[in-house]
Amino acid sequence: MFRQYRNTSIFLIGLGIAIVMYAVGAMERLVSLLGVYGYVGALALGILYASALTAGFASLAFVAMGGDLNPIVVAMLGGFGCMVADLAIYSFVRIGIMTELRALANRFIPATGLAKLRAFSLRRGIRPLLPILGAIIIASPFPDELGVSLFAVAGVRIKALAAVALVLNTIGIYLLVTLGSVL
Image (cartoon, rainbow, N blue to C red; front, side, top):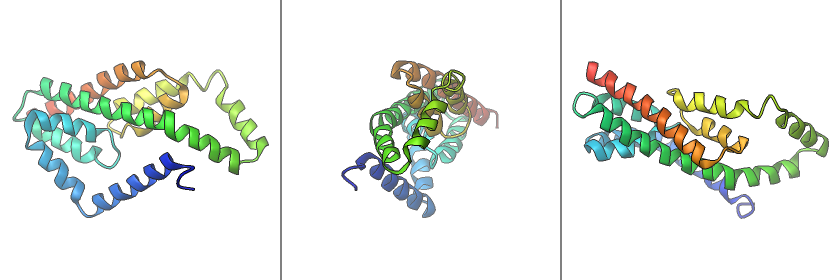
């Protein structure tokens, strides 16, 4: 089963490891350590800003950087790091997970249920809304996985996602760093 659903298994194992690291406080220590490294740390924190398990810690680290570093440079580096993470999530979802989820659905969901699911997902009103909803999620302080997954499901090109992710994450990080410089 692991070989057949390799990407899904890797995702679930990685999620489990991240949850354990979060529970024992290792994630918090990692993020606080990265904040000490200035602009290089901003790039690494941007990568962590995209994940559900590390977004909160990364957000606080960006706020803490606001008093010491140039907010524009920190936001640009953090936004770039977050875009890189979003593109990795997109590729993983679009190429790996979607193929495996289709195979799992074909195996466990009756054919009539799959036909109804496909008909619902192909409606003209639903599909165009997925990237809009995804952009709202990416722009919000919420983790990017769901928003990026909506882009992948909608079939949006990776270049369009890169532009959206870079701009929206840079703006979000800039607001956090600016908040830190005000406090």
